[in-house]
Image: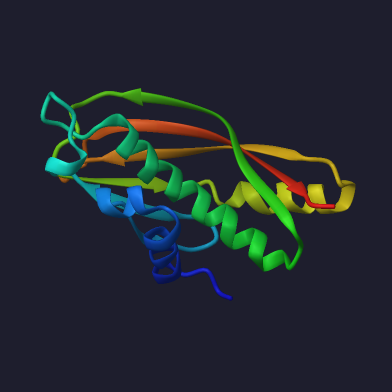
Length: 151
């Protein structure tokens, strides 16, 4: 099965309903870049009338994890993936539509090849940057993904 934006968004509806109801959607994905977005609204706001940090995190993680999932599927191997660590920086109040972009897809292939060749788990750090409609960075998330060949 090809991993497309539509299939990822349908998967979210059934398996990650909290992300779906908060409005997180994958907008674009290829082997090197993915874009996810979410719009600030009543259901995903914090008491300060901006987007709750965890909602931003769901969109940021989707922009990285969708590429990992897609490239794992392309190997035809049974490989597990997991976020081991993450960091985040919040630089501006998140209101309106926030678009998260990750351009670190090029890191995934090497990690998958190494885990297939050695059987050892591999880790990669991927960055997802969230900007508002004016192009101002509101938050930056870094995710340490681990990939490992299933036995």
